[in-house]
Length: 321
Ligand code: AVJ
Image (tube, rainbow, N blue to C red; front, side, top):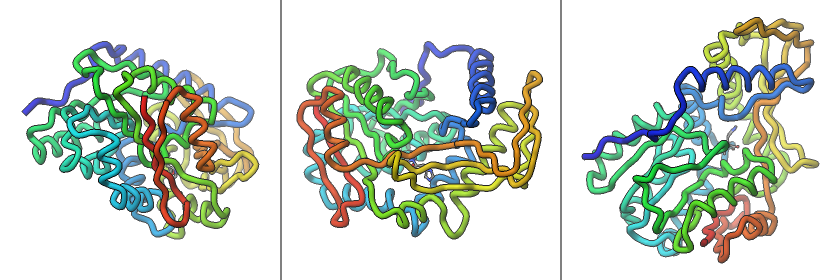
């Protein structure tokens, strides 16, 4: 059994930490404060996200799984047995693992910002599928997508499920898709899930559930910031907002101050937040079928195949090099 390996050219730990502090401080001090959605995913955040996926209101995971199941043979045929499966934002790796028995990838590469979380999942998977070579990489693919030489270039199939592409504004999404296109040869491809525009009430409920799991997921960001930045966010002073913004065709998640509050962090950083002031913590863009297929084609992909559920709430695409 091969041990999951690390990328060999990573910057030193303290360099990463300095950059993270600088980026976070920049966002927190902006007139409209914001943080990157990647900070939602510490170990607890990743677990809370897995819980979101089981909520009755959160339809994307379930709808996507149903599409994968219903069109399994067509999807496997598009990807091709024995390919290199590169999972972007692998998380607990369950979505990819479901494809393994049929797809029999030659090499499975799990990429996730929360390396620790995915590492545990990969170690577990390796025991279930001892014949598949597995690698776990803790890279932030929103910044770069340079893969180590140990990953062959032939027959790369990127797997980007869960509508995670929604976290990128359309122009950044185009850049990422283009970067993926450049990383594969003409024999490669991309299997991607995308959430579609639908009734606002359904979208609102999916991002502000009755049980409050999404609220916990969002508020956990403050705990993560306290740890990363040595900050003193008081969780009791912040509440969750999650809603669809139809003008921008995106879900917005914010943390809103319940009262006037001052937050301090590392190296003398501080900010006053007035009651009602918000930190924008995530955007999740929604597309029409055509607008997303157009985006794939603009990114340089040739043939695009797509599959939808009967309500047309969600779409899975396979784009070929
Ligand atoms: C992981 C980005 C696909 O936008 O639906 C779920 C994250 N945020 N509930 C999404 C999320 C709040 C999720 N993605």
